[in-house]
Image (cartoon, rainbow, N blue to C red; front, top):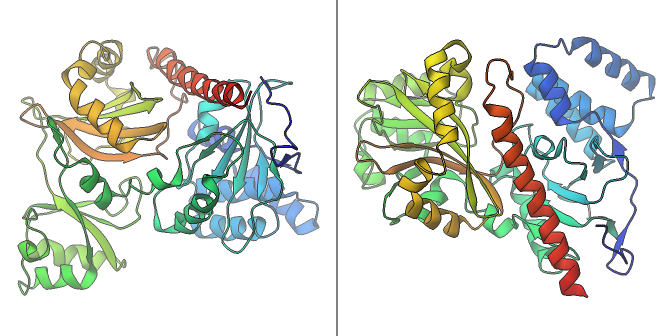
Length: 417
């Protein structure tokens, strides 16, 4: 399905640096592989001057997977200063489609982990890092479809602005355009989705350390910052991921203790919602939206409100897994039907071709939204022996994603003809 006349469209074959890639390295780490020997091998190549740009980017990711984020980011910055285009492993020798992912220079959680979505698709993936002060290549790398994978975070703003300036003139279809990605940060998402019937999204407000300190000392009321804010609140450092710095604060003294442990200067705060079910357990869902359709991704069940999948111990509890399996199998006839109108309105307002929703159900049965994101990890790394119901569901998501890319490329070709 290769689109022809690439040169006429301002596209060309640009030199790509091959890499092991995000999906393979993350899967190795997830499975317990010791990445230190590979790290040391790549460090030796760097020291000897024989490492390529792709190996440098792999080394950056390995450092982050081993917990050394600072070193990983520093290596990435050095690599991206002289090379910005990378090719991921492809399952087909002769791919029928080429996708160009437009990324930002950020830590490993700040771009859509698109390799997982395309790993077995036979679609070739090129990733172009868009860097402030470095011009986009002219002509652009040859591709059939582009997709913005940078997130709506402070570190990605320059990249999103650069892409947005040229988006209207892009020679191929561009999915997840930057103007829509820019609506996803927590404070802006509430404004975007407010008023949708059947949907509950607490206001998320950006506050400074000084403001929180004033509240802790009773010199300032939350109501003076935002009408909806009241104790207990949820606080997190602005720009944090995966629950880092996330805390429930019940009073001013709790804020004081929280600030004593946190160095950050800016935070997001929102009202706490008790979404526990009658059995005292909390249930958190991840829904993936592909081309306007929602799909079940996972369900985490725990006796704590601050759930993410790994701390719910799903692999060690058969009854939890049975409930997750039922959620996946009945999603189209149960969860998606219960929240049909709220989901449809949310998907319409967000407008992205691909994104995820982390959500629950509040005590009134409404869809409680925690986050909508284009960078959450959607993967098929879990053990098929422990989670036999997951691979078919993940493949359905991956196939829908690939089908969307093929359709957009085909529609563009037919329109051009």
